[in-house]
Image (cartoon, rainbow, N blue to C red; front, side, top):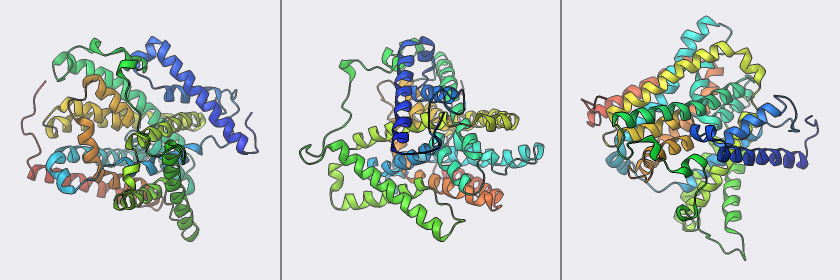
Length: 450
């Protein structure tokens, strides 16, 4: 049903359908109790509906042939917005206030990437010799990275000759979201029963708006402030223009590098993030930052992320998933055990205050998305008294460049035969951080037993 001719009306049709599916997903979340109990986000429901009814399923929805391209564009826009909503920070502040959280979060990233990658190289590739050497890193691509990273890595591998990477990454990301929700709820119930939670004692205490996603009038908060007069330019249009311009410049740089060095595939989102950092510095210097509302930027980023997940899931090619079903199942089982071990073993030993609240946020983030982490955090800390989000936001600022470098160079190094060296460097970095944590007395020697 999808047309071979792509024009502006094809774009309009694709987005019209996906927005319709998002609204249908929201209706299902509000009305279906089972979906509420599992906290399944509407964007994921929309993606499953698009996958089932779209060209990769029954072919009932007239999506265009470019369904899989949107996620790569949307992740560039999301990463373009990240620096604009970031506060000013110094590394001294990070060390003094959230050093142990930085070590915990950085280790979570490095260990998931390195250990899962080695599992692919030295276990899965021995059982199935024809597997791509980068098959193992499809686990952290989807679990730690989410649909955005899956889109970025998939596009990079596609440009380097491995067309199946995007569908594999989108599959692990989708399974990761489901795991983050279902596994997270089980862990929360168990922790509440054992007394590990600081702010809730009974899972049934959860407010209804967390289940339905509909906020009552008395609990609603402002989504942002207008920083420009609508008589000149609407405030939302102003913020949207800045984000799109940054992403577009990132795209031009990526294409420019590719034209001069075809083997160097710099992802658009990486370039957009760097341009965003440059714009942020310029805006800070000339006080333009005073007219950028972080809440509006965050709302735009959230909107594009919802679209990214919906398009990403809908674009999964089921024939590829079935082709790699057995190694994919083994990878996901191993990855689930790895994610659980890293999250809670390290959480007990590096998080001195509110260890479970901060660990369950990490679980949601490291298996699903940051939004899933926030959802689980709100369950165990409804009033946000643990300051988890503020501390993670500060700790993540020096982590973000490391993540960008990993995602940018992983495809290039694996395609050129340096995957093992790449994973070894990540593992060595993790060991160095453990040594630093020990030297700084961040490690709890006798964590609480439960």
